[in-house]
Length: 547
Image 1 (cartoon, rainbow, N blue to C red):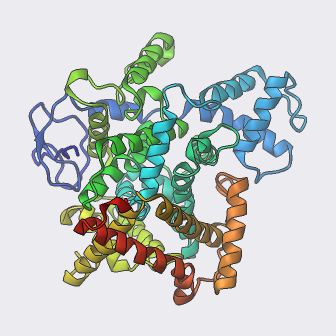
Image 2 (cartoon, rainbow, N blue to C red; image 1 turned 45 degrees about the vertical axis):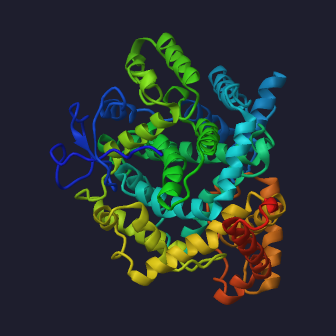
């Protein structure tokens, strides 16, 4: 894996973790939360000044088409309609030449152009995507599903809560401040559903119009566009609490990219930290999967360090050639986070890690004078939402133990995590990783065991989705079966249910712990026993032909 850069004690305000300017060449720097030290090299890392400049830019395609989609949806009288479906209706109307076809709404030339440009970007799988590699990346994601879930919670999301512009948005939208903890669990489940959809179904999940992964990614993209639209509308009216002068464009390009990287490079790093080092081919496949997801989520191609280098360079060159006039400042950002300055000194995957490190140096600030308490609140809310919940009921102390594997003690405390775990919590985590998860990871290599594990993961996700997103009760086994069936039906019809809704639906009463845990326990025990046998056989060298 790639070394984590470090943080310069001589180049920052001691009360914050955010660097405003790039360190001088050769300065020893450390990325927030980690220990490894190396010298800052401006040829290997994007400048922090370019990151600051990019905070002015949102998602041009989605921001331009959103008002059109909202107008069409309102005309149809279906304010809760999925915006991806509205986009498809608009695309069909434009293709037919009848721009008054949708609910009697006539689109202007600019609106037609916005629909066309959006569809030109997302209406096909990009040529640079290798579908075989995508499917391998999906397999890597599902093989390590229990670990990916822990990493996304205790490392990715927790770290993102130290990005103060993100927190300002969360405060504005009330995303994690719902009084009912099940509403917070719903939000987390919806976020995980994107990962679930993108990791299942083979490359067909990214098929435009029909793929669940494609639909999920676009719904998240439109959700972000909606947040920008609402906040900027209030900023213009002077009625928003969002500080635009400080935080700049809500959910801007660096914000979107650091989020995508915490779901990709943070996961591969986290797996290595937990002792599950990926083979190089598997690591690259997982990152390629996220290159496509990052593209669908609205990160500019010239800023996507996960995409193939020639494609990113071409996108940067095209941007420089086509931008003029008042947008000349945009030229300066072309390729700033997607193209390494010294091509032969760094591998493509390595550059993505370095971009993430630079973004963390520029954006992570857990003890900001005004935002530190907010970060602490969000992290505690995250722990409350993830601990002892349907369907797994993970102990709180195990979540904290995970967090201290990903963050050093100083940074974990700044994020707001409780005191470091005690001896027995560490023992519990070791047992969980090595006697439960590792055999399951090994078992994934066996086709018939992989099918059983995948079925179990799918049903557990469906249970959480049905309970927290659809609001179905899970008080007993009958409830759970009905919940799973309803969730599977909903997920078959929609890539991402409920994210565009104007109102929230309260989840039903919390399931009794023992009854919820009983769901699928027979399957789990059966798989665990077989996995233990296979693991023993592999480790002792007995009957190696089993695998």
